[in-house]
Image 1 (tube, rainbow, N blue to C red):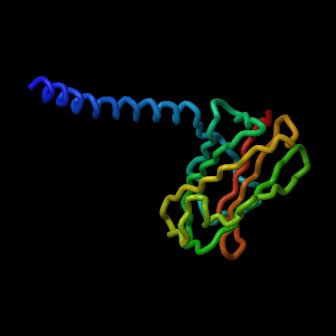
Image 2 (cartoon, rainbow, N blue to C red):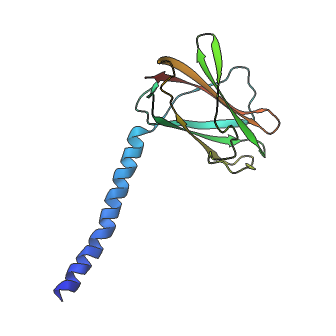
Image 3 (cartoon, rainbow, N blue to C red):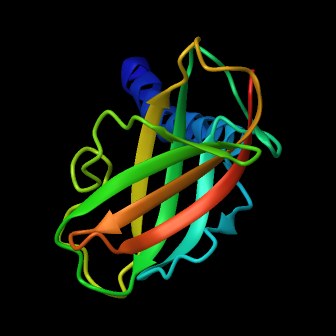
Length: 165
C-alpha cells in the first residue's frame, strides 16, 4: 500500500518537473535571443518581406559576435512568389568597403530550415548557424545578407550592425 502511494506521488511530480524544466529552457532561450533592428538594402527591389531577424546569442544591439563561437541568425520572412530555389549571399561592410563573405552552403533550400518550393504569402524561417572564425578582425561591422530566388532576383535583403569581439 505504501509503495503504491509513493509511486502515485512520483507520477504526480513528473509532469510538474517537466513543466519546470520546459520553462527554464524557454527562459534561457528568450534571454540569449534578440530580435534586432535592420535596414533594407538600398536600391534593391525585393520579392519578399522580412518579418524579423533574430540573433542567438545576443543581449543588446549591436549584437556581439565572439570569435571561436557559433552564432545563429534566424530570418522570418514572407515570400511574395513561389520559390523553387534560392541562394544566400553575405557581405561585410566596413565604411565604403563591401567584402563578399564565403557561405559554406549557399543553397538556402538545403540545411537552413527552408523546404523549397516556398509558397507565396506563407511565412517561413531561414536559419543560419555560422562559426565566427578567430581570424576575423575585431570591431564594428555591418553585415548585409541577401537571398536570391531561382532567377537571381532578390527575395529578401537586410543590413544589421554587429560587433566582433
